[in-house]
Image 1 (tube, rainbow, N blue to C red):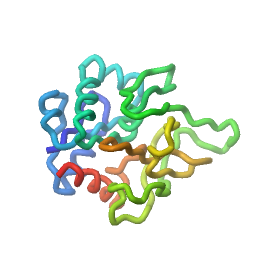
Image 2: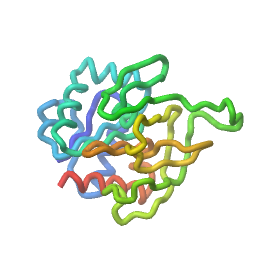
Image 3: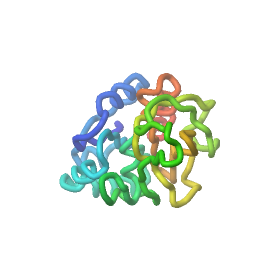
Length: 205
């Protein structure tokens, strides 16, 4: 069983349904004991970073997630869920994240590109950086669906597994040991996105 963290801000049902189509059993939960017993953990997310961290902290789920990540079992953050894995965000002020990965979440700037639209919304092709990652097993890079106004600046470039181009390189997939993040929505990215999600879920077996 794979746990999908319910902290009041997420594309819970779409991730749950995508996993079910792939043949994996998931449970949407905020129960620390259920999360601890899961073979894998998915942190979805839609909305503002500060609100998300407030919800996680007030419920104690921030510590539950940190403890789970320390267990070595696979963790995946999706969209805002990926950003929450990092140390800080500049979204509407400075906010602390889960600090599972080193880096900062910053807003896109169109100062030098007036034609650049914020939020970044639409289909962009991934550019693989670390082809040996298990997330890319038996895959050739394709297009995925992004919706975000903020992106991650990595403190350590070795965390970068794949990027995309949106008026410059944008962090798209990160990974370190058992912790992974996808800035886009794999569950909304067609067959290719489902295969990426399947490769993560396969790590929980």
